[in-house]
Length: 52
Image (cartoon, rainbow, N blue to C red; front, side, top):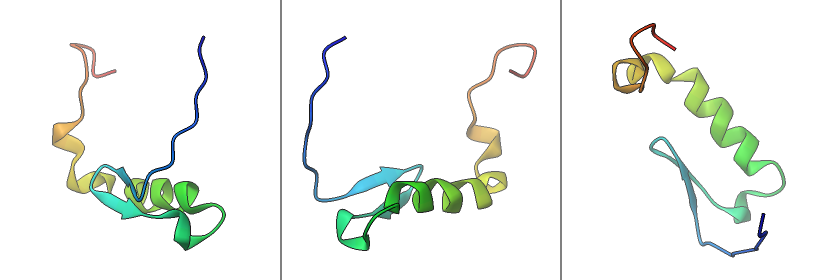
């Protein structure tokens, strides 16, 4: 697998936006925020016939 590094001005997780200016752990905070509001987008979740 080829590994690379890119610098981005912002990072979006399911409609949640953050930036490295937010400091260490900003991605984890974005995921926590997204998970806390998952019920709002649950119907958009891609699942198979068994719901997985």
